[in-house]
Image (cartoon, rainbow, N blue to C red; front, side):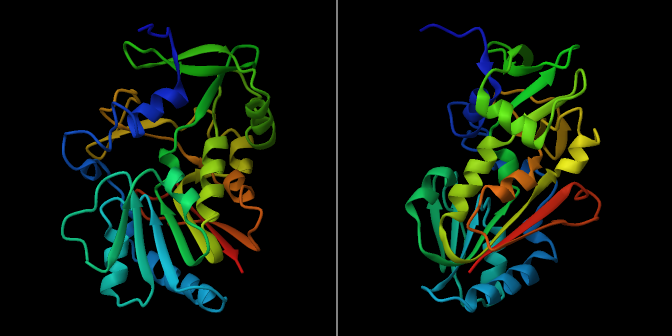
Length: 292
């Protein structure tokens, strides 16, 4: 087998998500013990979902349904079940159904980007909390002349290196539209893969609402240079660590939430807001879109 000199960041990251060195499917136990935040346990989320279910309830269609994409340990759905909702509850996650989950909760083990393509006609609410930031994406670093160069991963050390100038027209177009590379040595993540994932996820909805809550940013912040260092990090045991694409840590990067919103052209309304000012959640943003 020929080993490449370099892997694209997106390809190496994908290996840590669904591939041979998956952080989520590894043999080291529960990966969710590594995360310090848990939006599923917040006080704000259940009232918001109830409001969005009211929106869906005023639409025609099938049974009211809540689909939690990247459901993790199923905590959000368990809270909804305990609250006595009359909606059908479905979790989608890479890992098998958690032990002890309420019997009334349905579970689909698989890649949501694949599973979503087979589900259509839902009336209800789609929730993606701390999901899109895990979707692998390409990234660039500008050289001293301001030319964006692709970030790669060394296949031996699995550490990040800077490579050749970016040439892909679609990626260049996305950067120009959403995150212009205008300053030497700035970094930027290219959110096209997150946009595509959101388009698939919201495609499950016939009517209702979609809710994304994630580490995120918007174009004015990016233009101002707030995120010039890029946002790619690793998480292990609740702490930020150097991102190494070997499956030893969860790789994550903030979401360009405004480009994600534009990826769902069927939406009748879109609302982007700061999710919470609580410690540890200051970078979280929410996107609510309605489909009626």
